[in-house]
Image 1: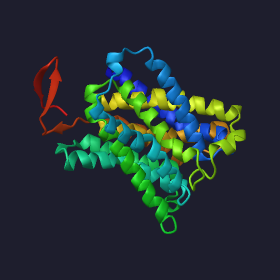
Image 2: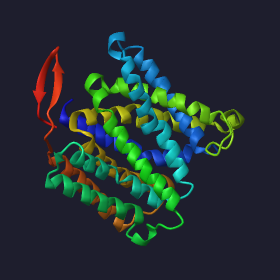
Image 3: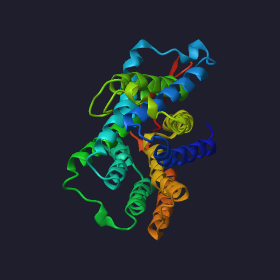
Length: 320
């Protein structure tokens, strides 16, 4: 994919993801977070299934040995990911949750350095650091004291786990992305996640409260429209673009774009709910965009040699 097109899709994706907070706030209503998530995942699975009917059988065929990876990614990126996140939000503040989830690029960078023996250039390191400063300013509005531990330690620990899961979701797709089209992988991951959510959604438990069957009255037109928006933009377009980027530019550089989310979310909240934007939001937003730009300029060099199969022949590739 052309790099300009790829970066455009990435920016479009984080705009969708940033607006998702407002969409959930408008559409969820009395539905529990788990039930609303299931509604979104179900719609996304339906969209994926319809599109897959137009894909050749050969292209959408998955080796049986890759099914465990699909299930793993479905848990790490959608099913288990949202369960952990929603549980964490019961015990911690949204400020802490957003910042702690923002450590994902740092986790990926550390993984690249320690496990893959990949050397990160100064521009990429500086970009990550500037982004983190920007996201802190956007979320705290300059009041760093609002980022606190103590009573929120359980939720904070779960959000760190959530960041680890997001990093694992980004890294875990490397092998399957070398074999299959990103859209096929994202489609199967989402469908797998829907299957995982069924036991949670249709039973009474501490996550859902009651079975979705007992809460059908809360699924109104607003909830349906919001879930459809999230499914079509944030899941179908968003996840496809995300995995396409991971395949082309790697998980570390791709994950840095996620720092734009809080900036977009702040604008959406101001536009839809008249929530104020401070000078720190503006400064933080500029820092986020600047950090993403710096990180995109940096290039990484890997010491690992890996085999790339091209038309039945094996070629040695030293690039990361």
